Image 1: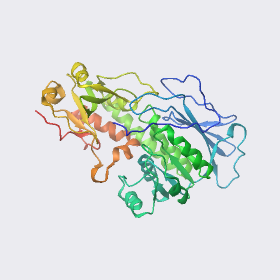
Image 2: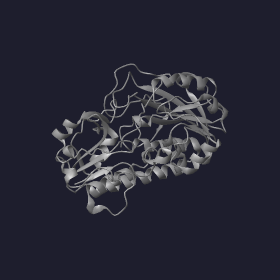
Image 3: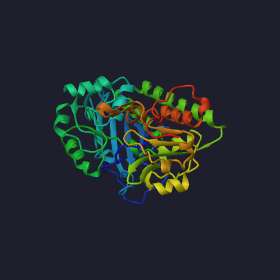
Length: 399
């Protein structure tokens, strides 16, 4: 799955930013606050949660990874304190200096990314939204509310900083902020200075596809929906485990996921969360590279590389929601996947007329649906359910 052009982390907004060399793979380490009890987050690596004296401390940390490139500088950190409205907040001194306090349960939510709208919908709190990125919403009701002016429009975080005036006017209890450029950092400071609690959301830095799902639990904690959030994450995890078990003993298939960028160049999935879908579905990603939390999931390669390394792939995800079809049969005829008709496209659950694509919204918290598509692609004998996001391609010329 190709991500939209989002750099995943951003600003140094805590008391403990670290300029030392960072790990290149595995779990991102976050120093724990003193005398606090950690709470289990089974999947997320970009944040950890602790409990102390009746409130929670959320530590977030992630590298800033440029789209299709590598991290810039050291990891960025944030410390958030979740305090029930029924008790006095702690003093922001010591290890809470410069932390952001969020009073819970949150009732008025502002955000600038569809992924967070999908979480609100999953938790049945979409009626608490007061501001969203814009009108490219897959959810018809949220889109209608944004178009009518009921919801403020802040601009989508993958390409622009938030519009501050409508944000302030919406009077949110919290602003869940995804940012696509380091230059957006100054807007965080301005918003914080105006008294709006801001929580940076680093989901795109998760190295596993289950990592973003734990953000459902984080927002569930803020919204007083912990039981529902826990049940949701458990459901997704159970489905993923069942799919992995289904293909564990089946022959592995060679596979490639790419999209054509024009001028003979392809964007090819090679690592991290997007690469894990192919492997966990029983595939062998012929262009795989080692996982690395500080490098994006895909690389740009020429057609000649595909001809050299991927001629014998069994299946090929050849398009996504934005790419155009590649119909040069002089090239395609050399690939086994084209010859045998196993070409797929990640264009399901799309509303192109409103530029809305559910794979970038609900798909990010339902990796079980994506993995299910991959399993059905590679193992036709288990196709007992319809495809959701990734389905047989209908635009590329076939033999």
